[in-house]
Amino acid sequence: MQKRGYFITSEGPEGAGKTTVMNLLGDKLKEEGYDVVMTREPGGIMISEKIRNIILDNEHIMMESRTEALLYAAARRQHLVEKVQPAIDAGKIVICDRFIDSSLAYQGFARGIGVQEILAINKFAIGDTMPDKTILFDIEPSVGLARINAHKNREKNRLDVESLMFHEKVREGYLSLADQYPERIEVIDASCSVETVLEEVYKVIKSQLEIIR
Ligand code: TMP
Image 1: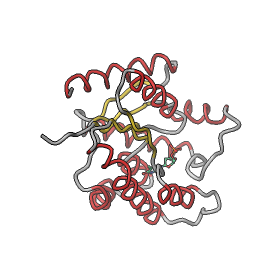
Image 2: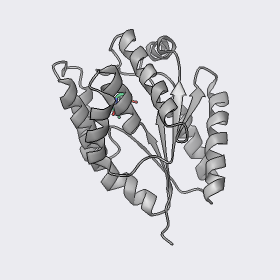
Image 3: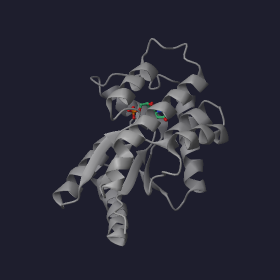
Image 4: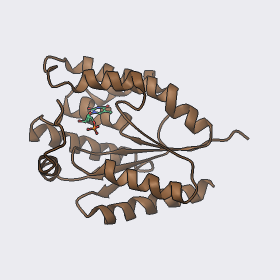
């Protein structure tokens, strides 16, 4: 039988703490002996990091929304074939900070391009590779944005500086995706402490890994 790993993605609005918590989760799983690959979108490999810089550059205020959506999908494609898929095929656990649901919530829903349109270009980019489990870090956008502003060292990119209304739509988009894909998407209350959120996420992921191993 072909060896297959496990594909986990983390999603959520800005300032939800997903990167911190997922890094801690990755460390915990590695300590337990799991072979874990941590990566992120847009980025994770050279070409996609370069595309990331183009998308998020604060000077690129003239970028049209479909151009933005296509660039995310292009970065996703290259990252998938170069890094994510080979790792899954080698039996590893891949933890990816953002994936298709970001495009569906940000470009499809909040930018108003349409979820079906974004799904279509992403199907072209990723084929049938969907996450086995997605953790949605849910938080009030005002709380998330306040967390970002409290971290003065964190650079604010082109999407961070969007209006509160935009971020509220992103959240709405995510929650409707969670309703649509209840088997795959697990909603976690990200307003709690890092330790509490980590515990919740660990419980969800560990139970899944025990089922497949
Ligand atoms: P990050 O801040 O989590 O690294 O993500 C970069 C930004 O890109 C963030 O504002 C969310 C946004 N984004 C999209 O709008 N669509 C996407 O498909 C992805 C992956 C990210």
